[in-house]
Length: 245
Image 1 (tube, rainbow, N blue to C red):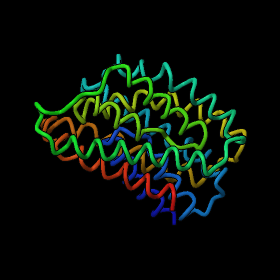
Image 2: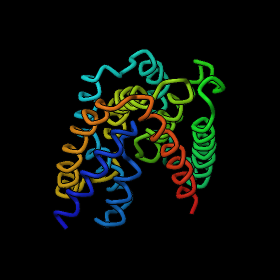
Image 3: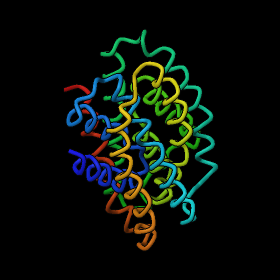
Image 4: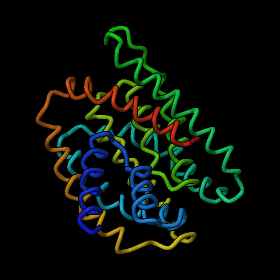
């Protein structure tokens, strides 16, 4: 079990940091499905586990020069307050309402991202810059209410706003650090962290998150985007479906 948790952490850390997410849904799947933690404990442990790897990956992304702080700061303007509000209101919001709202939103984002992947570059329609605030708010609500990382809407939004995959991944990881810290503070008061399980997964994810941005930096950003953009679209749609089944 020890090796399995470290190995799964490595896979999640490497894959998610390249996709610009914090890995909340993947960590939750491991913690609940394999480590058999309670949902409350899994939510707190997930954020605790993801944060160090996210920091390491963000620093590696920063060294590549792909980070776009302007977009990241705009996301945080609405994402941070939404995280706090979502955390405070989480106990009062019916689960079914939250579940379907997020699932529908993620599915639409996934479809749009997938559609954009197969359009010629000159024919792609970029979203208005003001939309970045909406994606930030949605991301914050995901972190605050459910303990997820919120990376899905952030990545989709940045891609639809015109950033290429390396830029979007770097900028997303930058914004998710603050959201994870705030979300961890609130969820820590509601569920106990499983320290041993969390540390084992963290060890693997730290290694994966540290090396993947350096690997991505060796490739043409346009080719990386061409491959990973449709993967991101499919992931968003699968995530949306798993929310409601």
